[in-house]
Length: 138
Image: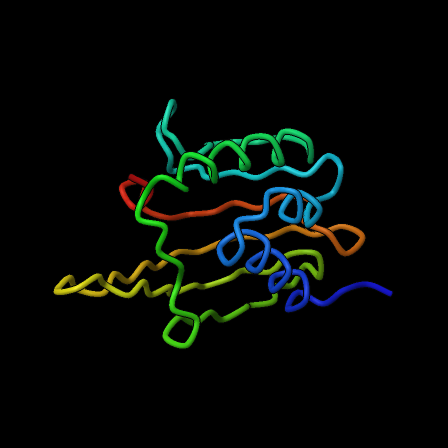
């Protein structure tokens, strides 16, 4: 039985943004899956393009480890939202995402909007293109 776009997306968000579990995130992808952040400049801390489950696992584990020394703020699930859009191609869906991070004492909340285009195969992500402002990953 094939998973729905909703199920695939929820697994991906839980593994990545919510728990920062590189192993679980990599398992959301096909063995030859591709994760892309096309707007990221070359050499940025956040990877621009990862090919294959093993590379996704290793690179995201390293990225999450570097982030562990940062502010470590998690998204405010109650205030964040997303809408999934299906397309004429049943293997492609688009995620329109608005994530809110609570501000620290006296800081304003931080809202992040982005779009992801997801191509699936056999219930896993075959290609994910993540479009967001690179300065959000500083």
